Length: 69
Image 1 (spheres, rainbow, N blue to C red):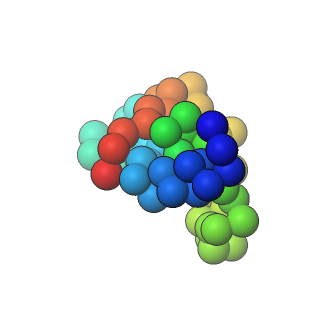
Image 2: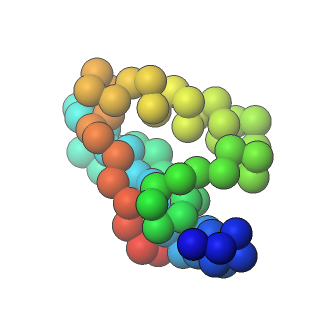
Image 3: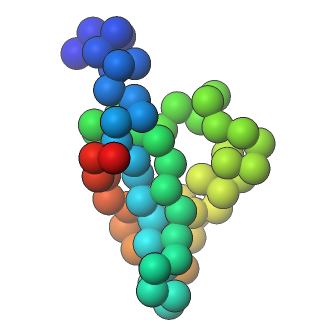
């Protein structure tokens, strides 16, 4: 995959972390087709939420899934 195709596919997908305890709640972050999130494009709050969601997989959030937007 070329760097350009990686950039072009970003925003067409999102990485979703669903809450294990609160149906319909969770976090979603723009990513590429492989689930890679470019943290440099996130706001400070977005980065903090992303890191929290990753750290809490299995405790508060289910395994993340990639979906097309």
